[in-house]
Amino acid sequence: MKKTALNEEHKKLKAKMVDFAGWEMPIQYAGIIQEHKAVREKVGIFDVSHMCALDVSGKSAYDFLQLVTINDVSKLKDYSSQYSMILDKEGNILDDIIVGKVDDFYRLVINSSNADKIKKWFALVKQENKFEVDLSYRDDLSIIALQGPKSTEVLEKVLGAKIVLNSFCSMGIKWNGEDISVSRTGYTGELGYEVFISNELASKLWQMLIAHDAEPAGLGARDTLRIEAGLPLYGKEIVSDVTAFDMGYGWIVSFSKGDFLGKSKLVNATKEKKLFGCILEDKGVLRDGYEVVGHGKMTSGTFSPTLNTAIGMFYSEKQLKDNDSLSVLIRGKEFKGRVTSLPFLKKEINK
Amino acid sequence: MSMIIEGLYYSEEHEWVKVEGNMATIGITDYAQDALGDIVFVELPNIDDEFTQMDEIGVLESVKTVSNIYVPVSGRIVEVNEAAIEDPALINSSPFDEGWLVKMEMYEKSELDDLNSSEEYEEMLGEEE
Image 1 (cartoon, each protein chain N blue to C red):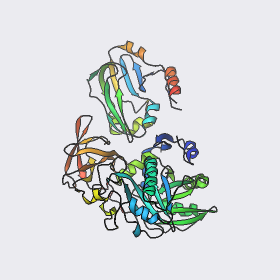
Image 2 (cartoon, one colour; image 1 turned 60 degrees about the horizontal axis):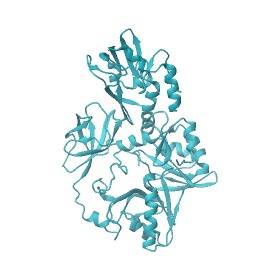
Image 3 (cartoon, each protein chain N blue to C red; image 1 turned 90 degrees about the horizontal axis):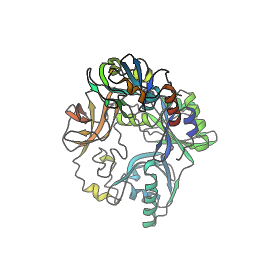
Image 4 (cartoon, chains in turn yellow, green; image 1 turned 90 degrees about the vertical axis):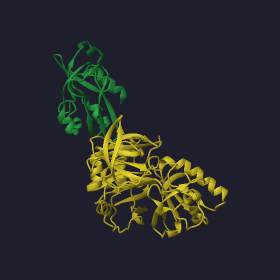
């Protein structure tokens, strides 16, 4: 199994480790509920170094990215980023990604589970189009996500710098003689940052964040947090037969920028499906794969530590509104639930 | 290292059985609660339900996973732990005491021979870790 530079830190903290897409990663430290609440109420830190950072540079970098992603890269100012997707030529989703413009290069963050697939895909597209583009996979970098209402305060103390960033913007900071990058992004629905730092300095930053009361949080809490925030996950909500429109992310599709791979499927998309939330009213826990009677299978489900009830997401082609009643089959029995629009937490994050 | 209590019987599925006369109190072990993580939902059988050894009698759901509960011995349910249904976190915080699951009247005490002693269970855990 592959290990991140923080692997020893997780083991020192007695984390439960699991195989996640070929990486040995912490699923939990103290417990999912405690970690989840730390992120909602204070600040938590996640090792997300298994995600694949790719720097794209060279003469054709812009043309390459306009072709392989569905969002419009021309909208990116220096030190800003956008949510986007990579489609194959038929329009099936290969990955959902973040595309950031730094200054003279772009940085993409790719799901670890799709990294090998995307590497092959990008190499092929580069070759077919004879793009003069340099694809530099940054295995030398670690990524630490710091998420929660106190994340600015803690990060400023540890980095010794003022951090003023709008959502989806980034900045470079000099720390211990190294240029590190801080981006205001995350996957929890909270104010938060992702710090790109060398593997050599990653443990030092990790330890200092913990010394400033950041709670280490694992993949378990990452999942409950993203579900409460209604954020889709590749392999669950994001599968080959859905489109960005179905997911409620039509705004990332740029038809005006010109041609891009997979465009025709989106042009012809029926837009009949929509992603909804289900709040379980009976006691129980929702899981992916459970049948939502009359609609389809639940794509994700969990117990929400914030709402203290089970929640899940599902696609439906029907027109549903908040509080419509639902019935979910759990172990052959019908459990009562109701519809809610996403996200589950209608929380204002201070901008 | 997980806590193990002497004098109890242990199943391969990480349940414990405490025997007093014909009565068996059943719960899950410290190892099991730790492996499950935060337990948030418990489904237990009804009083007077009858089961044979290794029947599935209920479900434990933690935030991340779901696990079936099996009866280590045959018998009739005489009591279920309402407090644990109300507050499943009790099973995490006190698996051998406040977090017990059901009490049964045993039909076949000889079935206890199929279960592990605390020493055998400790050995079994050693192999799993």
